[in-house]
Image (cartoon, rainbow, N blue to C red; front, side):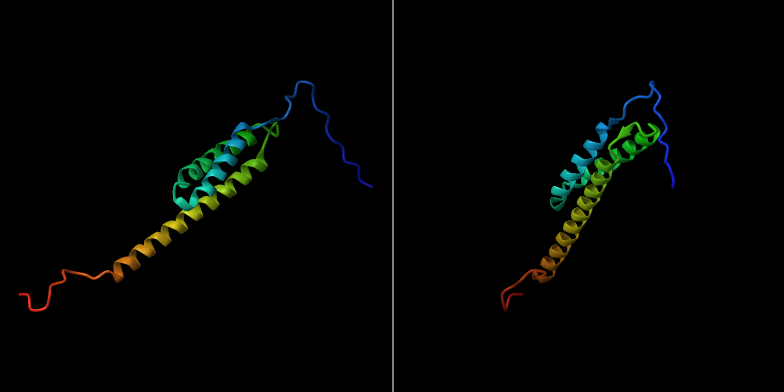
Length: 115
């Protein structure tokens, strides 16, 4: 039989607090996902990834007294999905434009018998 002993908290230890950046990462990631199809989602998704890096570093430095890592993870996933959507819509737009240019008649069209 194993007994796990949880170390007692010192009375001077701070209470765990939720990171405000973790919620911001989630919201920016969600906005990036929702607007990713319109390519405008690149900006909030990029901001979410940059802020997620900062929030993760702060949570690590806090030694367990800063919570919200689940929100950071969700926000990162949403931000990457938004970037993938933006990239996909950009590739589709380029393909459509190339197909449109390929079917368009080239050069100037003169009437028969014109010199």
